[in-house]
Amino acid sequence: MTTTTGDLTGALVDGRYRLRRLIAQGGMADVYEAHDERLDRTVAVKMITAGRAHGFDLKAFAHEARTIARLSHPNVVAVFDQGVHEGLPYVVMEYVPGTTLRDLLNRRRRLRIEEAVEVCAQLLDGLQAAHDAGLVHRDIKPENILLKNGGRGDRVKVVDFGLAEAVHGDRETGGPLVATAAYVAPELVGGKPATTASDVYSTAIVLYELLTGEVPFDGPDSGAVARRHVEEDVPSPQLKAPDVPEGLAGLVVAAAARKPGQRPVDAGAFLRRLQAVDLGHVPGSTGKVPRPTRAVQTTMVVDHPRPQRNWKALVTLGLIAVLLVSVAAAGWWIGIGRYTSAPSLLDQDRDSVAAYAEERGFDVELVDGYSSSVPLGGVVSQDPEVGDRIRQGATITVVVSLGPERFPVPELAGKSEEEAMAALAAFDADVTVEHEYSTEFPDAGEVTRTDPPAGEEVKSGSSVVLFVSDGFPPLNVPDVVGLAETDARAALEAEELVVGEVANRHSDSIPAGSVIEQSPAADAPAGPGDEVDLVVSDGPEPVTVPDVVGKDIQDATEELEALGFTVKTAQIWFTGTVFDQSLDAGTDHPKGSEIWLWAR
Image 1 (cartoon, rainbow, N blue to C red):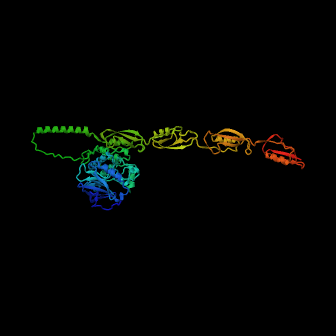
Image 2: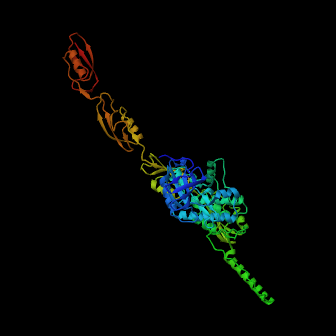
Image 3: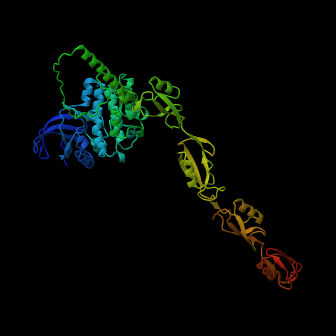
């Protein structure tokens, strides 16, 4: 397929969208104002650039476009259509005359507090509708937030749901990071998939920028900025803008918590917390966060001339007015005035938290708790949470860190692997199992030892190596052939083998009392307690001495040597007839025995 490049102004897309003018350009897509010739309306067409079209996940893009198209919310840019034009994927959207939040920040740097909260509330209102529909934006930033000219409840509009994901691929399958580094949630940097809590984090960073005029983290490159999101807590916006109300600042910090589970779960939860914040005496503020504005009618009050009253009537009216004001003030105090937002105590420690809370009109109750992430003495959590509605002078329960929980490694030797794993799970140990042979624990599956050893104290979540028996170590039967029987027995017993049956047999080559054969043979595999049978030599087999007296000396010698005797001869005369022999005829003697013959 041929891919079109360059300015497409004037092109007709899908036979109906005439591209009138290029209104925005970016590294990912170009945006055109276009005329829908079929419905006679102005639309915006976002065309993926040629450089990004390669490898574009059109299926994911189409799926998200269809999902967004089903949304009908004033704070989400409507999607009408999507497709591919000459190799370039495109999406047809609602045309929003106005500007981006980024353009507004470039002009004004920061917004008034009430205006910043109103923008954030409308942004969260739109995100809530998307989250309820199962959509995650993944790239919340001022560039993706449009501000409609003359809008009220629909002034803020979120755009580009899932676009970066379609361009870069699915994060769950190992694709690259798709969020913008200045606003990226820490879990995305670590390779985890985006969730509604990821959008909450990015929205909190946007609100931080609206309130202070800058993002919380910067760096020499995007990688350095992303790492700071992982390694550092977002500071209170009050450090940059002291006029930010404490409840609002605390909510920003809570929504930008590094752990997703510590943030509001989704945009709706964030919005409800935001609406509960008391803006206090911010100039131009009504004292409470506005709900996302809807179009309202304005009521005009007209003054009419009133007839003069006498002084008694005026006094009476004055007293009534004072009484009404007093009653109203009392009602305000009983109903609303006694309440404020819970301050953030999370940056304090055991020594400072009570005084810090007292300065703000609260009592604290300290409760000890273990934490692997908060150092000893630091504040782990508070109840009520930061920004929650709370009565003046109320008590805030603060959990103070005892550091990581420590536990002694239990004695597990001799237990089954399953029993040991269950015991270590109670302490959240990170268990690694290794196998080894053991003579002390010969039953396979039994725990032999742990590292660290039993009784040593370790932190909760520490690594523990569990050694599990594979039974006795494998044995090879030693070679005992040729050894004296006593030596052979000692060699076998040293290998935890048992001498079995012992037989005897004559041998011409093995001395009497030494081993001729063994079964199993040398180097055969065996286990402790296995038997090894032996055959022990009785020496050479005995031979009966024949009677050779009267025989020719040469014939007698050959006969005796054939039987295995060693023959020695002595001749008196030269006739050569045997007249005597040293071993008596009919007696038994071992082969190799020496016998003398005398001849004459």
